[in-house]
Picture 1 (tube, helix red, strand yellow):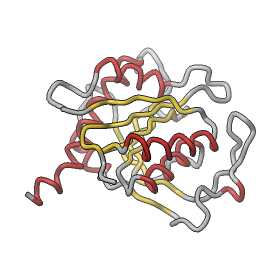
Picture 2 (spheres, helix red, strand yellow; picture 1 turned 60 degrees about the vertical axis):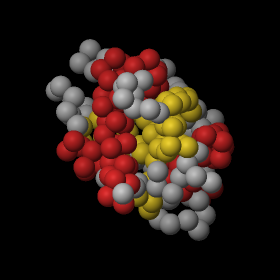
Picture 3 (cartoon, helix red, strand yellow; picture 1 turned 135 degrees about the horizontal axis):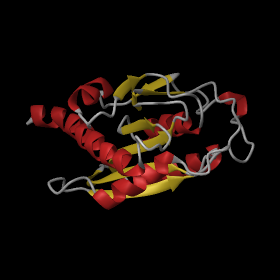
Length: 204
């Protein structure tokens, strides 16, 4: 199946642990109001995922089967972060923390027999270099933390042949309100799409 060149899916997560407001979903809601910008002829689809391994697995499979996006961008919250982190890869093992339903993947594994690491086809280092969002720091990471975000990312990379990304945002604060995080997502995702298109342009 060919990807729909006109569709970008962006997901955020719902509440978990003591975090009754998840900044990832607040940022994605802001992005859905902003859109990707007038010159991007793309349909933006936004969805909330629960912090639930089994449900996230089902919904990621459905995103790729039904929507076939050009790019799926998953946004998660890192409660200890002060910057926005662009995650280069998803990991297959080490999922030992229980989700909101108390469930842990059997053996701590995402995909039995799957590769240990799947890297995104988007160069997150290049995206980091290409974005400027006021005084918001955007940093590169190769460790997405082995929780439902990382689990979702690995499965999305698997289903989407690398056409997925994971962005970790800090909690909401006076310095980083939802409006600013939403604007940051717009800038970062536009840059990701430029990175995706570079090989296509070279091929032409």
